[in-house]
Length: 304
Image (cartoon, rainbow, N blue to C red; front, side, top):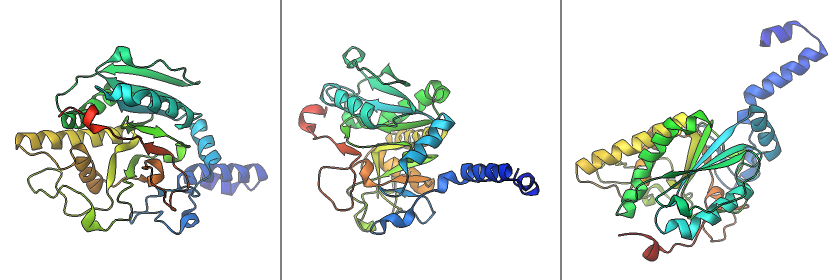
């Protein structure tokens, strides 16, 4: 197409050439120098998304034209349903991927207690019943198998992308199409400027999650990407967890430790800055809070 357009020198073809070049280079449109006080690109040239680096209207327009569709998975098991689910879903309706087709997949052991919400256009919700495990660590780790199975049986047939969230969070600002990528990892808010020696990788050589060092420390409260990439991640983590169980080992931070090992071996193509999963502490680097951790009440919420 490129040679054809150059060979026919007319205004219409020049316009077509511009549109074609825009389409193939769109993914690289980031203003990396707009935020010089923070890291905006990894050593393997993946963008780290911060406020000021992108034009939200441009990204939304492109994904609306592409008819991008997004699945959102969230687990609300036991007391977490009553404590967090309604706030999570209500805030997602206000801020998550507005203008795109979105399907919420709510995994719970109490389907009848999922709150009824008036959803916007092109947005739907599906409730999937899951088993409640006796320990919260097992609930956390077994979600990887559930995510993989549901991508295979359901999500990939309806959505291009899937994002997986913890339920004890609340959307506070735009969480839009700029976050979409092939493989998306969330930099943990506690460690985004921390030295390597303080990153809490699993350093037990007996675990499949074992790492001496890595690139960043990623937060398992949020990850996403194209369905095939998220399924690969979930399968890797689940197999690592199962092999650890056979060897009577449990990774330091459970599924998050295995997720960090996966992203060390398979570099994410897009990283979300701590704006996309922040706590409540003020910080001059955080110009926009997009998602915030809800107050934790582990003593009353978690089973032992």
